[in-house]
Amino acid sequence: MNVIVMLMLVFLIICAVAVSMTKDLLTSVIIYMAYSMIMSVVWITMESPDLAITEAAVGAGVTTLLFFLALKKIHAIDARNEVRKAHAQEKLGGETEHEK
Amino acid sequence: MKSKMMNKLSEWLTDEASALEREMEASQERAADEDEAALTPAEIRWAQEEKEEEERIARRLNEWTDETGTKISRTLYSILCLVICLTLIVLLLYTVTELPSFGSPDHPINNEVSARYIEKGLQETGAVNIVTGMILDYRAFDTLGESSVLFTAAMVVLFLLRKDKESHKYSPLAKVMHDNPHSDTYYEPKNDIILQKTAFVLVPIVLLTGVYVVLNGHLSPGGGFSGGAIMGAGLILYVIAFGFAKMRRFFTYKTYQFVVLIALLTYACSKCYSFFTGANHIPSVIPLGTPGAILSSGLILVLNICVGFVVTCTMYCFYAVFRKGEL
Image (cartoon, rainbow over all chains, first blue to last red; front, top):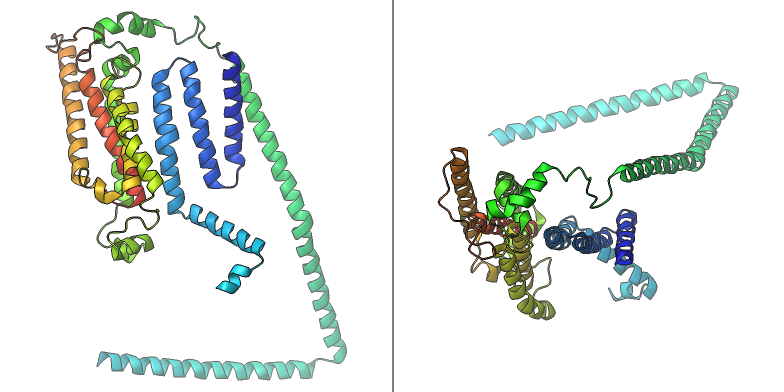
């Protein structure tokens, strides 16, 4: 049991560092969600199930959704898709440009 | 009449301006001619060399700032980052080692307040779940403040993000929605079959879990806030899968206003009653019931339901206003 808790705490630290290190906003939001999920399990091991339920519902659920919506509002997700499209076009060797 | 006068005025003004320009050009040319005539060839060469020297120095300065300058500032930046981060880490770790260990008996939180809660909580509040007994009976005034904070946050989001009749003139997203009133899914894929089938199974389960958590707040873990958040997540899942048109059949802006108003008023009135009786040492007429039964613990069940309604509506309101600008 103790080993699992230690593993989860290490995972939390890794997540917390990774959130601030990733350049992509969408990825960091998803890592934040993983952090919240593990955190709710940690709350259960600390015998506070009330907090665990709230953390799972608010931290992992609603907050992540609101972050997604905010990213959509500032076109962070659309811009990401466009970057991907540009990369794909480079790999295809500009064939898609001719089709246009 | 007016426009004719304006035209004339503007013509006259442009004429004047062009005349002035011509005069200035002519004077400049004259001055240049005079200068060249006055300078000897040696002087001209000297001036040119001076100019080249200046350019060379400027180029070298630019190169220096581009290469060495950025290198220095980057190293400084990373060194400062490292120093500040390491200082913070050392300070925080030092603080953590000073904290009493988790669950130790001589922890400062184990004082007479928590002893009183644990010993007399069940007897005084009738709630088996001691956490709910604490936050909805001993500290119910705080919880009313929390609900009001949520309500205020929802109001501010509505102020800032809600669409009005004029907003399609300024916002491109609002314009798209104004032009196609039935496609609220300009930025979302619609009729996703996988999402719809998943939501068809999940939404009732999620909503029932939320209702269970709210109603059993005084018996099992959970309570108004967590149950409300679960129900709000269920509503959000429903609206993502099936769209706003179906949602509006049972949840509109008016429903939101009505539900939140009634819930907050009920909360405030019931709490006023218990404050009044408590402060005047009048015995409350609301029975506490047998601990463990669903209809027990006095007002806590009512307060839980009120908080649950407020949180559910607020979560859904956040989502809808963020996504579409209206409920």
